[in-house]
Length: 488
Image (cartoon, rainbow, N blue to C red; front, side):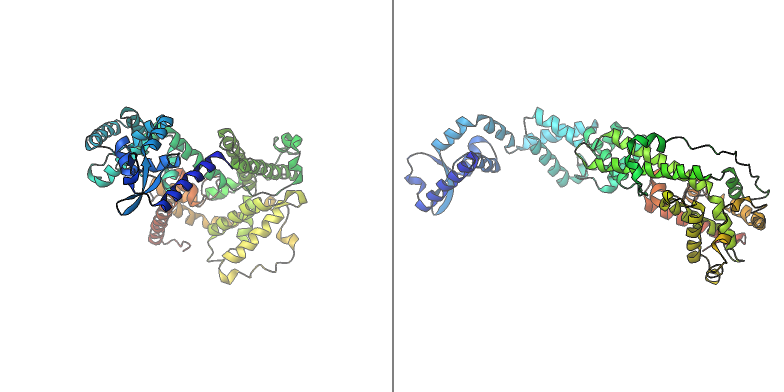
């Protein structure tokens, strides 16, 4: 048994035996002090006396008149005081604060707060200058602010920052606000803000989409240079395809991206999945005791950004495939660009789920994924139109983009696209940014989530949703005025 446990049991035994003895305080031949007496004698709180009992001050049960209460023999108190001088000195710092001391404490705290000090800094300074415990200072200031909200020293201080507060702090830091500015704005110490930034950065990293197609080759670290090497050059330089005149800018831009060779496709898919594999392994290390290292987080972010860049390279090289398939599913009332938007999302998901190691052509895999999605999204009267189209070979020609003029049918849409461009200009700058980002209208850009757009603009995703709804309402009103049909 530990000595501390034995001493505690012995003190409890003395108290129990004295309780059964029914000794009146008047029968003892030396002074007996109550808890309140000792509190006044040492100028400490009664809570401090309770802590001293746990630290070795032996008490006994005596009859004070008709009541049985805890008392302390003078000899016991002297012995405890002699062996616990430092403890008693510290205890004096927890003594009750007088009204004069409280007034001085409030005055100094207000002066420091007006100079920009946080509540933690004020507490530390006053604890030293007034020889009081930090707990006493903090408790006094907190009570003053609660009782005097109109003249509170820290009116904006909240004991615990909410998750939304922390996200805003992180967003402000990413937009360039310094640690000193954040400390002053949120009345927090530098170390407190740094902990919040690390916490939010880890949370953001844990939300990264790092799902990937595993391959046993990834375990061979000696091949990392091969996995991450430069994209192989095609054996024959690709022929520059000229975009037909009169196409909307989005369709015309698709001709800028050359189709991938089989070797390039294999390399890019392997590279993208290996980058996610490595980033995922590093992310798991964030849960270890040394997982807060900035260098590890930096590397995860770098790997993820490179993986996204590689994915975008694959997506951009296959966007013409989406347009080609969307054309086959058009009817007189179809929204062609709505089909393209849906098809692009299917293409992106196909890139993330394609297993390059099986040796199949990605264009075939992606075509089936796009067709499956169109079967759910096109109007009901067209859902079954292409379900039984002859053979897979006719559906998925390996060189679809080499037909003489694959976009001739798009010229009928030129007038409507010009009108859509004009009504888009009726939105303000922020609304245009949100619509362009949300629907992937920028060249080579994927549609962004509400959260991603919110982080870029420094507002919540709920606010982005509200602005997007307002902007779409404006577009519909403008379209009605111009007699343009938009998807509801």
